[in-house]
Image (tube, rainbow, N blue to C red):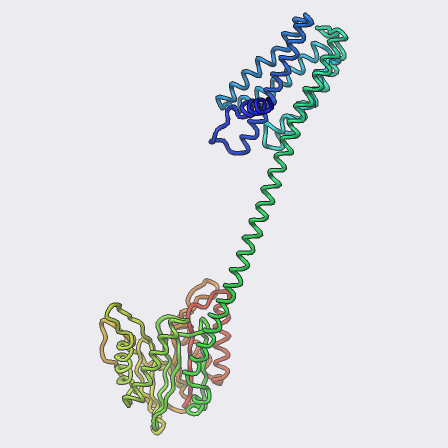
Length: 468
């Protein structure tokens, strides 16, 4: 018997519900079906007892909710939920108000205003609409109470009928109120369960994130340690300050890698009475640039030490062939290489021999500019490669020679976020040529920092200046 009642109650509750409805809609439709069904049962009970008591007018009034309840359940079955909600709310307040006025305030129907006040919270989602309609029901309750108190009831019930209706209305109102409260309680429990599950998922997710963070930090530390170690190796390959100072008593070196490792490098080598000096910009920066710099640095060393080449242009020709050979791959075309300024100073004659790949050198003499232009081709695989040329100039003791890569000139910054440009760098050399070389380095570093400001450094910077 209990199973039969339970199944029947479930079927009534599920009228109009299918898979297309979201969970929140299903809950509203279920509670509507249950309230409408209870109203129908209460109406039948009222109507039957009124018939037994031969109160035909009361029986007819009591039977009206049953007919309306059947119509509302039919509308729900057709999934006209919005229409059902409005009709249910409208019928409840109209029927309760009318019956209370017709039968009098002592008949007990007025107690249905209590679930009527709570009913909008089930039907509607927006807080303002719920408060508005609930306030309207409260106001209507006050008006109906005073009207019922001011006029004689149209249908006068006997004391026995009054007691029956009062008890029946109290039971019916309590049942509907209980359903509404049960609806809110079950909804809150569902939300609590959702929140608890979400918190569990969030805790698990945070644990996974923290674990990944620890792994990433460990990997990052390993990578950073490896890069820092590679940087120490790269620094060991580059000439030390002691080695440079051994050949140049008056010089400065500004080397600002974009990353820990640099694609720019400087190179110094002495052979007999000749000092070879170069500043180079290899393809890329960071780890790729540093790998290319090792290949190019090694090619320069081999050209001078292994092949005993003396003139800068011949050294660059050989260096180019060694770099191409190092990057030669039958399957892939690798065009990595470098731009370079290479000069050779003869200490006995103070003659400077220069050969360059894309990078010139600047000489400031008596505040005047002398530019030794480079060949427009790189060290590396190039479709229009030709032998490098060489230029010669005799230096004086006051000449300042500058070798530099394009990192400073290409840096974005200033008020408009533009490139610094090579012309402005040359002007800066001339403007500050009267300063000591140490002070020139400080001025260049300050100028770069101020120009860059909040912009990211886009490339390695390497500038060397010296006097003989």
